[in-house]
Image (tube, rainbow, N blue to C red; front, side, top):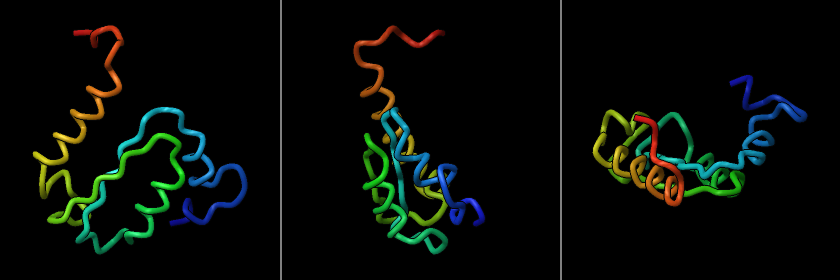
Amino acid sequence: MAEYLRLGEQNLWRQAARVAAPTLVIHGRRDRLVRPATARRALRTFPQVRLVLLRNAGHVAQMEVPAAVAAEARRLILETRLGNAPLPG
């Protein structure tokens, strides 16, 4: 919680605004720990962001709807790898 309240240049939201990489934010609509306003703020803060709201997920979407989370992760990887060399293998 202290990180969310940190002031100055080390504030997490200021750091997020400097992330140059494409960013995927997944938020479960049934999340009882992280408010939906946080997902909206992430959408406004990260320069290159896709926000995915999962209707049937709570705070641990990767465990509750793993196929949906994996599909979104694959989509991000494919979108960001286009035109790049293949991943080492």
